[in-house]
Image 1: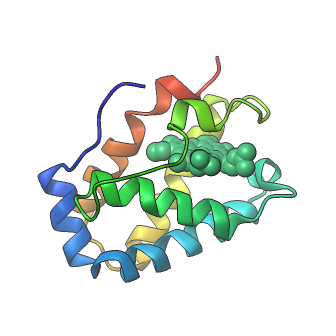
Image 2 (image 1 turned 180 degrees about the vertical axis):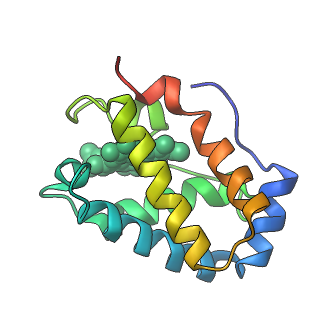
Length: 129
Ligand code: HEM
């Protein structure tokens, strides 16, 4: 995996603004429940515990946001190899849901753009053409 994460200043500022680990956790559990129930990408989560995935994602993001130093889960490019192929439309849909959840949580547009830019950097490693 490309080494992209490990604390970006704009992400650290967002992390503080949303209230650190507690705020991030709330956002991610909402985000993963919303994806599970989504008509376009919900099937990826069939038989999975989205709360467990949300916790992994939290650890992963906390490292990128400077909230912790370690992440022991799989790299994003490895985490999805057993799933049905994730296509561009699926990836776009996930980002759209993320945008909605972040907006509902009161994040300003600029922060939403920074967060989405960070997640978009993983597209090439995850998306199948
Ligand atoms: C449409 C896009 C995506 C879908 C449908 C998706 C779906 C999933 C699913 C179903 C799992 C659980 C896999 C399993 O239990 O075997 C998972 C794990 C994970 N995903 Fe995604 N994902 C997407 C994009 C992303 C992106 C963009 C990132 C990072 C920025 C990411 C980070 C992770 C991480 C860190 C895990 C946990 C890895 C572990 O268990 O060690 N995913 N994802």
